[in-house]
Picture 1 (cartoon, helix red, strand yellow):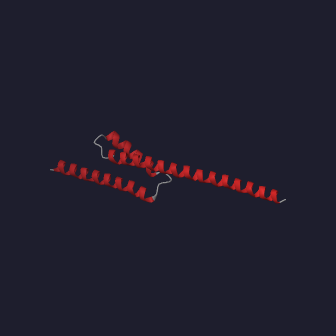
Picture 2 (cartoon, helix red, strand yellow):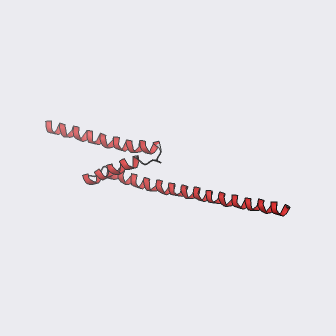
Picture 3 (cartoon, rainbow, N blue to C red):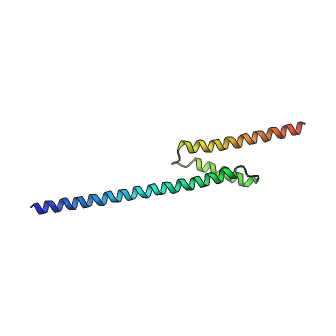
Length: 108
């Protein structure tokens, strides 16, 4: 009888170990995927932030679209969104300055 109980306990411990290992494996893969996704997000963000101020309007328009898409990603944190909004604020400030300079050049 003791052998049956011992065998059952050993089997149960083995099953628990397998389940824990599977869970840890999934968690590790999920963390690795999130890290890879964040790295890709950052690469896209830096590209778009640079291209946003490109003298080539089509590239700047693509950059705006990319930044909008990056801001909509579900897993980014608030700091990431604020960073994107700050880049757009800089762009808007540059546009306002250019419009003011253009208006003053036209009046002068």
